[in-house]
Length: 284
Image (cartoon, rainbow, N blue to C red; front, side):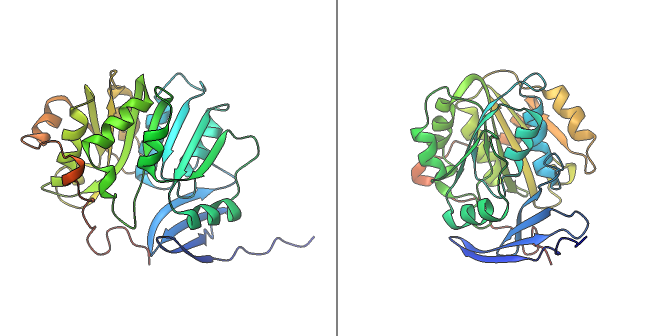
């Protein structure tokens, strides 16, 4: 019997740079997506619950704790990448309804052509700006909003203001949860401003990150959580502590100390997230 041909890398110019799909030599149908050398997503088409990136596992933990096991969720994903989390949720919570927003039309075309979604998976993808999608989405329509939006290596400025936060709050149900992948380093000027933004609208906040990032020793990812309802702090803390790269869940008084004198940032003053230092997220 003829063996299937070895997968080969795919390179394509997309709206925000040069995207590459790189096959994983150890997993037959797994791919790493990079844009301008920075890793964006990893997906295994045969094992959608296999999550390679630490911050993606933390976002998956949030989805796991958002409702009773296997209960379907209505989720709005801002930022698509290779659709790793939507595939994960479709596998772990069948019948969930997921709307994926990706502004980069070229990237969306590459992913849907080369890494097609399974049929009848409940995932709809749209080429649209994330802020526009929020402002036009139905009120109280989402159980969870997952934001992982980077223009190149930075969160765009129009997604970092308190007006953006209010738009997200309008779309979430009363017990819904907002979860965002952000990146910063000490003295956390950007991250503190984001926490101050969300504190103006949401009663409950948390931050998930590795201790080395929280202590200011290196630039890295932090998952911000916000909800009007209490967050499952203890359950999330257990999950992230058991990861290969353990993380901590900060909330309450430690988080208020981190926010300190940071003030909300409005649209007129909003800036993109900081530029990562050289080599922070690049692959060889």
